[in-house]
Structures are given as structure tokens and as C-alpha cells.
Length: 422
Image 1 (cartoon, rainbow, N blue to C red):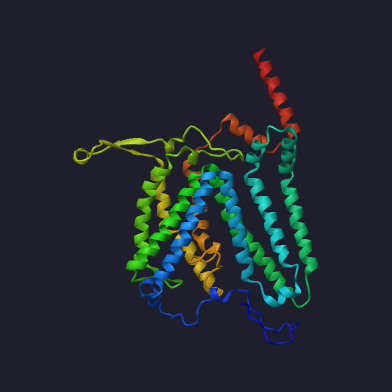
Image 2: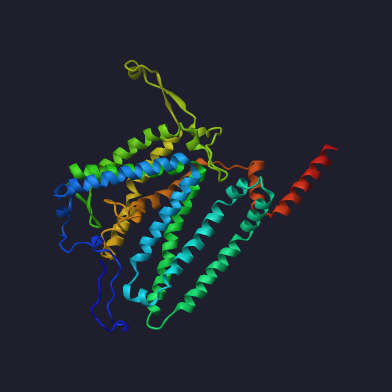
């Protein structure tokens, strides 16, 4: 239920305004200042909360598993849907009832900027995949090539159109609110699209680089919840009263073990490790990257004497997995702490209530944002080699040429090769 003002002078700028938030998301007034009273071990309704959270987690796990099975394109679509929910939750955070009633079309400006940013970010990231998808159709290939060539111009003028729209929509007495919303919208776009851009790049580099780090964050979250649920006694940080040192340390150890073993399991599925160079939906087959080819390590005689095997197969990616597990355990949780502090600043419990027991989509993605950026940087810096093959160089050149220019380049290269043969 939304709060309603009894003041009849609604047009007065002195009228207090209340954010459009559900009461269920507000922090109860009776919350104690002491962290100890808020630990899960002292929560009388913790079992009910655990079951609600468990059912929601199972539904999310089943849905995400199906989408991952369908492939890269569907995972990208899932990321876009999550983006829309996150943007909606964050847009609503600073909206005010009285101003929105007198600015009925102003909120659509948020979404204009959102979809403009989406066109710009994904147009830059997936341009080559899009070209590779339509190469068989001459008309579509020419259309897509020109669209990519002028994509930056299109996005710029869409942004300028939004800027003009904003200026023309300014109303007296609401300048401060409107400029605040304008700045808030841009901050949201930076937060949402920065992490999602890295996430999508990870997806098309191979589903492994999306699924594995996302799974580590989920494992760490579950581990922290259950270790804190049963053993939590020592408060970890005031920003998040129910977090404990026992949960943090227990989850870190469990995540490191899970990272090493789970990487070995996922790395054996070829369709998870192959990069996607187009926007098709079929399963992939490729020559596995060396980091997904097993090395056989002989066991010491004392150990092999008691075991049925003499050596173990270890994928090189498992050593990379340890670094990702360490980051997911130690650094990524600070994304959650940041979100907790942010929610306390706005006096809300959750960003939304889309997922029972978990809050909103933004509540679930706080640590994933930090992790996606780290994995992309790690992958590009320590995993991907510098590839200067002819195919790579041609891809880089073709990306900036139109269809006629590409045809001219191929013709010229053919003439050069013919002259050299003669």
C-alpha cells in the first residue's frame, strides 16, 4: 500500500514526498542496533524463511538450467530480462508519488535511455556474431553491415532525442526532482550495463565462463547462509547484521573446494567450453582449448598403494578456478555489503519482492556484478592468448568495412595472390 498525504495543497513545493515502496520492504522500526539480536541462530522464524528461500532457489535453479541447456542466445535473452527487472527496481527507488502524478510521461524517458544504452552496448559487443549469422543472405548481410557501421550515429541521435525530450519536459517547481531523476537514470545505466556487458562477453567466450563463476557465487551464498544458520555466533559487519564470521569462513572453504572439483566437471562438456561466433542456437563442436585438456598427475606411491588408480586427471582450468573461487569467497561478497549499505541509506529491506525469500533481482545480482567483471578481465589477461592469425586480422578489418568495401578488398587480395603465383 502506498502512503497517502492528507495535505490538500498538493501543488506546494513544501509538501513532503514519500517514495513509492511497498511497506513489506521497509526496515521495521523495532530492529535492534545490536547485531547479535539479528543473527539467524536467534531468529524464531528462520525455518519458515529457510523453506521459502529453498523453494525459490529450486525454481530458479530449474529455470536457469533449462535456459543454459538451450544455449548462448537464450542465456543472453535471460540476461536482458534480468536487466529489465533490475532497472525497474532501481528506477522505482527514487520515484515520488506527487511528482509522478504531475509528470505522467516523464518516467518513459528512463526506458528510452535504457533501450538506447542496450542498443549501443550489445551492438558493440555482438556486431561480429551478428554479421556471421547473416552471411548467407546478401540483402540481410548488406543491411546488417550498414547498421553496424552507423550504429554509433544512431545511438547518439537517440540519446540526443532523449536529451531534448528531457529539456522540453521540465516544469516549474519540479526542476530539482527531474534533474535528480535524470542523474539517477544515468547512474543506473552505468551500473546495470557495465556488468551485463562483461557478462554477455563471457557467455559468447564460452558458456563455462558464465556458468562457472555464477555457480561459485551461488555456492558461496548458500554456504554462508547454512554455516551462519547453524553455527553463526560472531557478527561480521554492521551493514549486514545477519552475516557472521562463521558463515563467511565456512563458505570460503566450501567454495574453494567446490571451485576445484566443479571446474573439472564442467570443463569436460565441449558445448560449454566452445566460444560462439554467431547468433545461431545449435550446439557447438570445436577443438577444446588446451586448458580443457586433462593433464595426468601420478599419485605418490604411499597414496596409490591404497587406491585403485595410479594417477589423476586434472584440467589446467582447475588452477584458474582456484583464483576465481578465492575472489568469489573474499571479494565478491563486498558487492552484497555495498548493496546492504545502499538499502540502509534508503531505509528499505529489499530492492523488490519478485523472488520470494530473496527479495528482488537486484538483491540476487549484487555479487554477480563484481564477479562478472573480474572473470572477464582474468580471462582476457591470463587465459586468452594473443591471436594474430589471418582469420583474426581479417575479422578486425571487416568489422569496420561496408559490404561493397569488403567485396573490393577480397577482389584486390585475389588479384595480389594471382600476380604472386605468376
